Amino acid sequence: MFRLLSKESNIFSIPVYIGVLLLIVIGFNFLDLSTLDFFSAVITFAGVAMGYFCFNTIALNYQTHLPLFLYTAFIFALYPGDLDIGIAVSLFTNSIILILLTNVDISVRKNSYPLVGAILALNFIFLPTTWPMSIFVIFHIFGTSDRIGLHLFRLFYGMFLIALSYFGLAYMLDLNSWNPAYFPFGDFTPSENLEPLIWLIPVAVLLLHAVMDHFRHFNKKSPVSKFKYTFLLIFSLAQLITVVLYMGNNFEYLLLMAFPVSVILSRMLKFLPKYWMRECGLWLIIISLIIFKLHGYYNFNI
Image 1 (cartoon, helix red, strand yellow):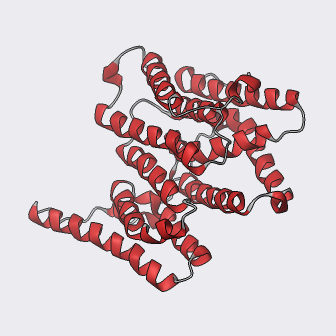
Image 2 (cartoon, one colour):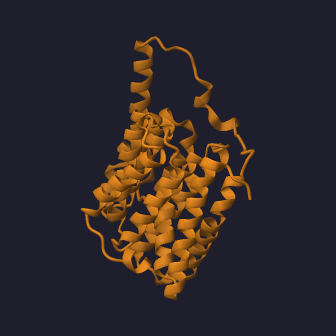
Image 3 (cartoon, rainbow, N blue to C red):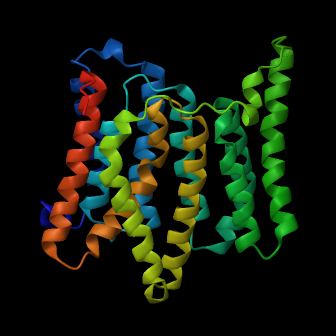
């Protein structure tokens, strides 16, 4: 199976993956479209579609089917069918941020900061718990920009425009009350039932191995690969902070990790020294995700 997925993909593969994923999700909801929140589902699948295109844009996986397949498997395993609108919007906007800030053209990255700032503000409006992404982008500016002050100004200017529009609209609609959810820095909800996550331990172990292996061979990477992969790792850390602090028992928060995890794991599998290791690693991921999905429906215990 690994050899089959290692074949080169093309742009026409993406609609096929999206269509298959949609059919599987609907089928797993017993072919009852009413179990899917329509508006949330549209935004979710728009975000998923953007994720598929990100693979070709970032170009870290040699344009094979493997990352597309893994991404589809993660979305299927983690998508509950009635996704929170905030997470759905974050899936969509995170893909845009990835495309903009991993562009090899420096001028594109520099000129995109007002748009990135606007996206971050929009993210915060729909899901305030995504605030770590703003910290991530600020650190990214400090680490990669030659004119830090100017680019920070552009970033905050984009945020200001969205904030001004939001408060202006709220004023016109006579919405004068303040929602405490917009200050999420003191309301951390630890999960009380982590048993379902036990089935994802093999995936976590493979991820840890992938990151360690990357740094062991860091000097062998090309400059572009180093930049993009390091960016992806720090991006994953920002998502992980949100997951750890705010997931609670809402495991759909793990969807925020689906894209970077798919990239990291597919690269790790590709560079394993033995073919049998690649095949076993792939099947271990698939089986873990299937069991996790089935646990959500049948609640069987270990």
